[in-house]
Image 1 (cartoon, helix red, strand yellow):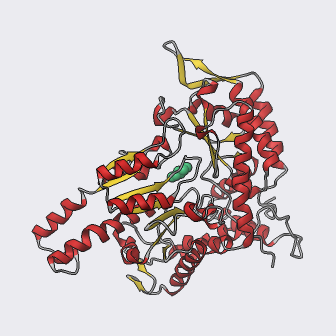
Image 2 (image 1 turned 90 degrees about the horizontal axis):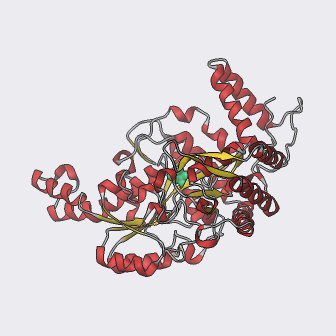
Image 3 (image 1 turned 180 degrees about the vertical axis):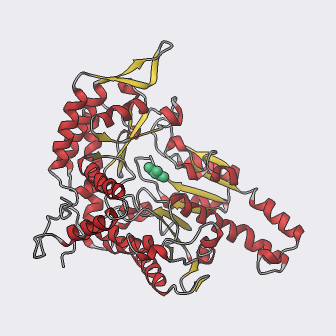
Length: 494
Ligand code: DSN
């Protein structure tokens, strides 16, 4: 039976009808779905066409392998399994136990973690589990010990009121959204900004880099319970050894959200001070970004936090998704393979090549370049907002997303930045030469776009004008470029 673990591998026909195993699997699945609701089958097939034709530069997206995709589409979806492995609130969970254990064991081995929890459904869920695990360890457990009881249900009404007040009075220090942090790191509209007394740290306005001295000074003054490191739009590396030193100095728990760069950690591109796992008390991640697994989340932690993390369900999560945990186990088995390391290194090589290509064409990049999987273009130098640039690029067949830049004058909706990332195109097999071509396409679109006049005078922040014929020309070039790197070459739905 053919096994396709490398998406760039050429298809191998292996059945009497000349079809690959992957083609047969996906065609059969669509036939079954088509028998019930053909429009869903058509939408699934159409999505494959779109993904194949897109020049996908969204830094948080990727292409999971056929094995990962297939592990999700089955009867594991039908099973309730609240609790943890071997301690469920439902009977009949032995097979769920198997896949959850496999996901956790692979995660521990790939990341060198003491404990892994594979149940979070998403990154925000993983972060909620982490926050409540730390609150459970640092606030609830001492309160229970002081009251001489085992669990919150045993607290007197008076002690329970004290504990609830204590939960709502904890401080968290996280990277600000416009410096590249994530909304779950204390942004006010998110629950994290409401459940904690929150303060942000940013980047040095001169360099765009994390200012550890300012962060240390802020931590000394603020004395947070939790310091959150990690980012979704910061194009450089974070020194987690220094972050841990600061956390230890002020008595904080260090939490790292590595959702964006988990693939670079798994692929041993980020090591030493830049590997969060040996330095952080608790690490959260999604599994679908650079890690290239199914859409979901995960928590890694040291032994002292394990029992608190394992209460994630039912503390803040609903029943786990066993079909997704099965796919996490498959993806992590793939991440343990030697070829995953070359994929991870190629992500960074491609990102650097893309940055260099843009810089040599005159683009302005936040921090002047990149050390990871993403590049943040400050499109104000093209006279555009992020929203205009995103729309003009999309019209030209290039899929990106707008993003704030540090101290962004256009706020989080219009923004002044475009975030681009290389994991997906790297999976597809594009290399540094293609990155230079892509830089050329992006620069051509941004240079050929201008802000449209606003209805009430001045310039619009949303509307734009593309030079005649530019979008069609670039879209054609982008389509030609990706056509040379077939996506899922072993899958033929025709
Ligand atoms: N939405 C993800 C991203 O694009 O970075 C993070 O949640």
